[in-house]
Each structure stands twice: as C-alpha cells, then as structure tokens.
Length: 224
Image (cartoon, rainbow, N blue to C red; front, side, top):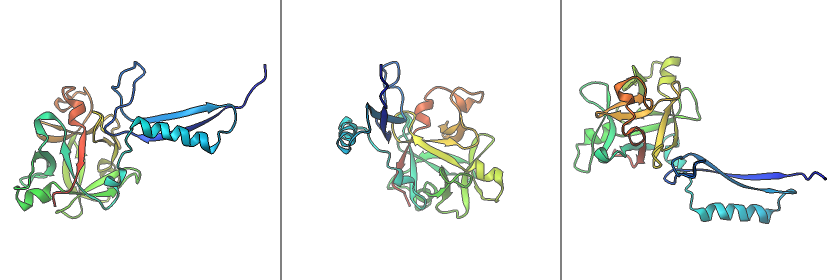
C-alpha cells in the first residue's frame, strides 16, 4: 500500500467566555482551541478559507488581548456572585491589595486606587505587570502569598513577583492571571483580600470553594 503525504493546517483561537470541549465530552475546560483538517496534499487556499469559515461559524471568541496591551489603563472586576461590584485596589490604610465596591459615586481616590497601568512583564515581556495609576513606580507583587503595592526595587525577585501571565478565565469568562514564579498560583480574592493562590493548597486562601470564580476577572474600563 502506497504512502501519502499528509498535511495539517491548524487555526488557533484563544477562548475567553466560550468554554471548549473536554475529552469527556463536557464543556468544563477553557483555553486554546485548535481546529484543522488533514489532507492528502498541500491544501489549497479555498480549503484553508473553508476551515477558517467553520471556526468563525462555531462562534468561538478571540481574546481581546489589546485590552492588556502595554500602556492600557484598566480596572479588574471580580466575577464571583458575592462581589461583582468589587474591584482590585490598593488599601489606603496599608499596602495590601484588596477588593471593594467601586461605582460612579465612589470618591476620586477610590476610583484611582482601583485603576492600573499595564506594562510588559518586568521579568517576562510576554506577560504583564500592573502599576498603580496614582502611585507611580509602585506595582502589584506577591509576597507571603498576599498581593501588595510596593515600589519597584529593581531586584530579580521583585520583577518575578510582580509578573503575571494572563490566560482565558478559568471559570470560562474574563481572564485569570498566573504567577510567573509560582505557576500553580493565580491572582485570587479571598475574604476581600487579594492573594497569589493555588487550587486546594495548604493556605486558607487556597480553598477550592469558589476558586475558579475567585481567580477569574473582568478587564474593565478604568475608573480613573
């Protein structure tokens, strides 16, 4: 039996609100989805166009990566049912990162405290770092598994602690932000404090209850 050369053309889509299908025929997974065809020879442009048309028709959504482009100003809104009016902010009484309600009637200080400037990741330019909009030179970084607002001291440790890699929201909407140097950990709110948390780890903040909700964030328009 003769052998035929086979070629695969794949089309990559980054999913956000639309979950993908798991191997168990569920829709419990979200992430990068590949669709392609296998042909007995190099596919024509018409075949490529037909595959892409199928992808588009399926309704999978491209992640709006431009919302996290360096220089963008954003606010990060919680998606857990308890807290959909809450945003990540720095606490004026100390340097902890917390979530609290922010609305059109909030003070100018509260709005500014919950606004962040996106930068290419200090330790990995494929990821991001978040600078306070009203505390220039200060970034969100994790230390002791909590998130804090601290000035960039130029050290390798700070750069790594302040670098997070966005991916489609683990809950199936928004984004989740993976720690660069603790890759099982993501930015998570727990008891209104913001942590660098894993799913079911040893800390109270690692509780598996509501974990997928708590690590999924809407990239919202900046409050300031």
